[in-house]
Length: 163
Image: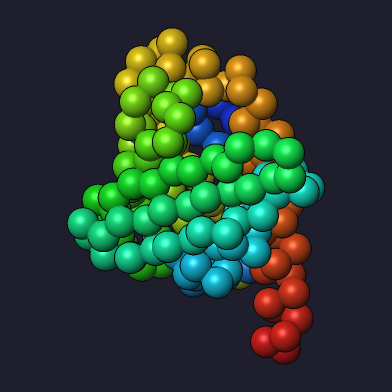
């Protein structure tokens, strides 16, 4: 299990992000689906906060995130949950308020556990190759990597409290 971020492009319209975490997948799933936990790690680089984190975790339920950083406009996005298989899979749509990704994307997150560690594989399906390549040019990789580092720290602190 690799604890470093892996980013691949398995097809012309897809982006796949993989990262391992030293935690059981039920705990990682909770961190992906509970607002009080999501707002603690899904922050990107230092200086960002998440004043809005709303999650209605059910098929057809909606979610909404808004990030804030001093001196910049708020960045918001949301979508609808299409599939939820606890604790192994979440499929959701995603659309940013300022649509820099070329329309709605479909995001599939799969959690696999082995020996108490979890690999999170997230595949984002864009509307076109141009949309995928445009998203890659935004610097999103650094934001995802910083957020996953935050998630690893949160999981570590949660595991320490459970012992």
